[in-house]
Image 1 (cartoon, rainbow, N blue to C red):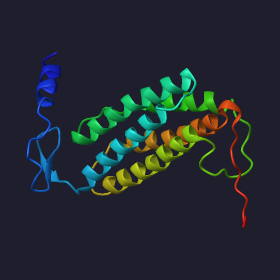
Image 2 (image 1 turned 90 degrees about the vertical axis):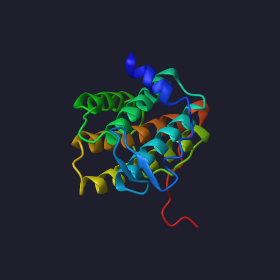
Image 3 (image 1 turned 120 degrees about the horizontal axis):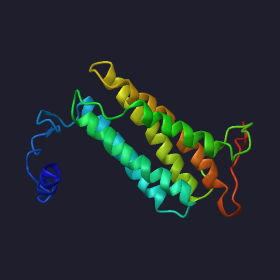
Image 4 (image 1 turned 30 degrees about the vertical axis):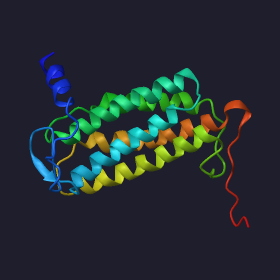
Length: 188
């Protein structure tokens, strides 16, 4: 409860002026450059979470909505872990849960024989953007992992998440009688 009080108090003043010089603080109090690899990774995870929020602004089945909302909470945990070096929040069960959802959702879809174009409808297109940002977050964290110790579950989580977002985009494209657009190589 004390931590919740501190968080509420900490967030009551939005501007602090502590970042005006190009530095920012990690949750452990450490000051780092705003363009550091760690902050770039944290920012990309935040961007991913925002794109999932934009996807949730569209109509979708409750199971999909619940899944994406859970993922948003997971991404806050992931960002928190990145913000507190040497803390582990993302554990194998996070990945297991994604894999279960992936298997469930994918079982509803026909086998994919061709590549599909990102789009189909507004909800699916939004989810495809989230998928692409998830892949970028994965790349940013892989870069960070080359110079700092990072929980290996984070990369596995993001890898599964991008797969799940692809499957969810496929499901969303089929909503209300919609369909996926297959890639036609050499289409002029």
